Image (cartoon, one colour):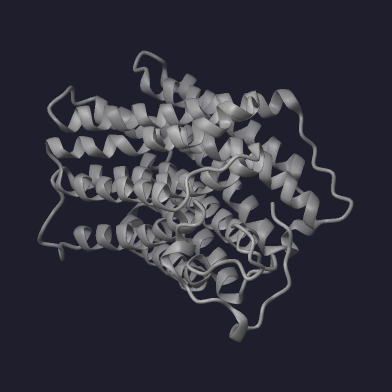
Length: 397
């Protein structure tokens, strides 16, 4: 996505500053997303262990799920899209004070979501604000293929609205429905973005690679995900039909990914981590299908999609985009590669262990949570110094 620049000696690197940190959308939102990944899961583990005295103002389980989707997940989505849209359109997205305003809205959402109650509706401001920030350049550029991201942001906002309606006195079914829509909305974004960048990155990195992209399969894979949310939500649909649909979607996404695959991918860490993240999507859908007909744990299946797919894809994309857009060579540091392995292992432990061995459910949660926190801590340690410094070549980014 960006021209590779030579490595700059340490003594020649500029110092960090608030102005540099607010110079491009990925800088504050990736920083905050990494920090949120560690803090939110660490806090969740202390709540589970009974060590945290001051509990959130809504059910701890609802708080955990909401913050992983609309705290961690929304921050990474914002950072990526605020950086990608200028590349796609040639038009700028908010920087400086305007970007700081978006950051403050996101931070306010985290505070009110913890305390709960009527003030929590302030959390509903972030996604519309992000949509306005992205909608201007997207609409002016007149590129229909890129406008598709705005309805998905609208889908996520509706999910957030459903969640808060259910937690502020409305019908009880709306909160879990909102979380389900949020899950599939984020997976839809991963499917859309992954379908663009994974084959593109692979083609650039591996000479002679020609990823196979079948247009009808690309379209079906994207639209199949909101259909999964609908199929799972309608109680009158037989469980066998739900299982069949989820299994079919898993096969379609697996076939799509295999069309991009080549064995040389395994030698490039910035590539294999994205393929690994995307692989958790068909794995999670398969496990969900099995869970609907009584095999395994629904929670374990869901975490293949969250801890596995969303977590691994977010970590891998942040690592790649941050290097490219700060003018660094596209070669991850050794701790970053370790983080890739840790996050993949976290997804496998959190999903497959309780799915196959339910008696080890609690052990899997603690082990996976520790691996997750360590992975994102390593990423934050490596990348935060890059995100607060200007590009060494003086370019905007």
